[in-house]
Image 1 (cartoon, rainbow, N blue to C red):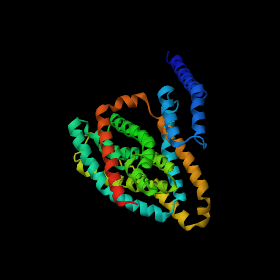
Image 2: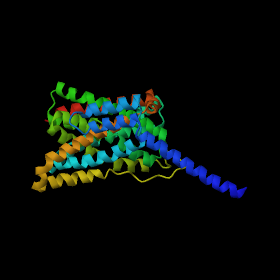
Image 3: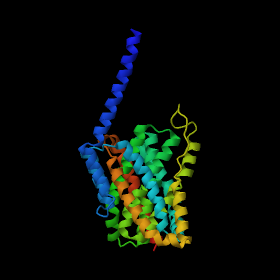
Image 4: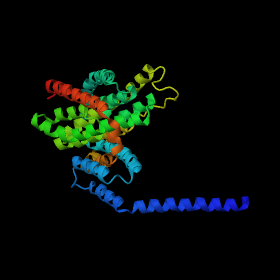
Length: 341
């Protein structure tokens, strides 16, 4: 009996392997996959704007569902970092440092105030502490990157990360459409609008998408302000580690902080663009390539949304996210109008 059982088990494993490979191949060439690939390819042309790309991704995810959900998240993560680093080749280092220092003034006060207000809302709405901390971090610093970094040091559960990500994602999508018309209605200068978007919009992808509709000056300022704000991930994570003694979730070992290293590559690219004339001459082409890549990133981010994520968010975390977002947007706008020309 044993001699007969071994070959049968071997054939069974081989058959299961063949079945999995066949399913993967059929999925790769299904009409759903071909439609997804066609839309993704169209985002690499000048026909699709950043807001349109995000909308296409959301509509595809909610109607047909993303055939490559895991691959989309991985590609979006690294493509975003590459494109932001390449964007440095189109920005002068002096402008980056000036805008970054201006944004640091707003960051110092607004980040602490946002966390304080988020904690008050958590107690009032009775939101789980870790989900609330993640929403506050995503709003105060830099969206998904901050949520990923903070979740790694407070040992947040996957469900809590999904709630925070879903909340921030929906507000990001709204900001991409709302901020440019508001900036024009308020007659903001490119510097004012760039500073406002860099402070108020969560993710760097939506910051770039919104600021690019307001001109190169706004894009330069917004990128520098948001990336300088992203550096606050490190002190915030260190502060949370020190405050959570014992850790917020017991029984788990804390992981290392996820530092956004691509910011260093962005600064290196900006330095090379400033001091190497040949690179400065190629800057328009590099910027165009980076812009197309960021448009594709927004499509992939939109396609990563799911009905499960929308259901998981709930009204209480959404209230916290909206209140924090309105607070930081309104207060920063008032300060920018007073201090920035």
